[in-house]
Length: 453
Image 1 (cartoon, rainbow, N blue to C red):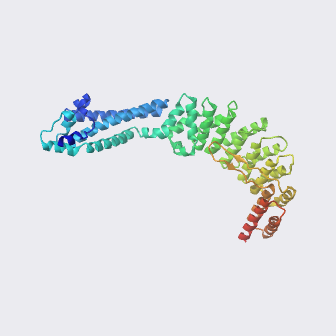
Image 2: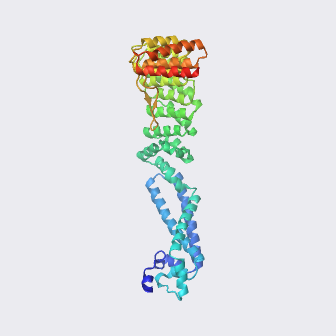
Image 3: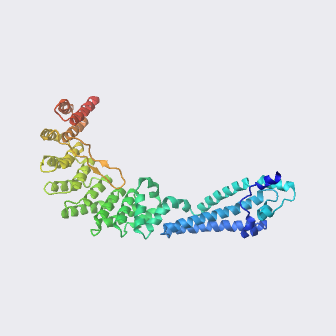
């Protein structure tokens, strides 16, 4: 029975005595410790060399993976030597002799066999496991945590340096995802973003501009400005560079951007990318310097055909900058029946924010002239993975005038004016012939006014 039980016994990690290296290493305590020390130092050196390669040289993602896997294999080997060394120190009895000789070792006494069984195999396996974790942790520290960094950022950095256009595009597309926001703060990655701004592939350059803006890479400002000024480049690339300058909030760009906007409009009043991008950049910079230039462009667009994007971004900018000087221009658009309804809606929507009390009677006149069922479209703007932003709700156009007058009513300190506007809005809300949505908007404002009294 004892022999059967002995036959079922699990040995400590396979018979190492059959491997020449371990056999020689275990022949003496001194040799075991010296070998382990050399293995540990070599492992740390290899990790440091790998870190320098990944940070500054590598352009081959597949090669990097192979090197990292190989180093992890070396960690397993070194950790095994560490476990053997610690086992030789802490385990009692003929433990090292058993490790050296394997099945050829025969305990001289029952006590020897007892000590051998007491210390393994389970304890040694735990010891090896702990050595693996410890070796990897310290090796990663020696490398400046580059190996753990590689999985989240380094692989993207390598792909951005790759000679393959597809690799560069793929890495930058991944970086556009807001979930990668932590990676945007990595110094090496930000430095590489500046380098790929001038990439020969337009899509790579455009994506690099976009990420530079989202990550607010200030170091990229001057290269982005050079891209924006270069009329020979792809317009989409230039527009992305302009938008990025706005997100970086680089004020020195303002004068040059206004100059580019004027020149672009002079040559192409139906421009769909550069002019909207410049207007959006001033919005991102929270800057009012472009108000008058935008009004000038919208005034010229009354007499010439302009792109829908110019109308959308022009009135969007005036609205969010509370540009009251643009109200007269907005009213001109509303009065032009030859202008499409969707454009007149943009102008009417802007009045909610830019109209002053002196325009109330004008807006009431426009309200009466507007058919009840004239409905405005939903208008969106979208950049890559960002969520679409609705510029105004799906209101009947008459409801936009109610909102504009209602906002002024709520802000006014003149009780008599407020009462007159309140009565006008109340009549709309109670008119059964009015569009139900317009009536609902009127009800919202009359209720807000009652709560304010």
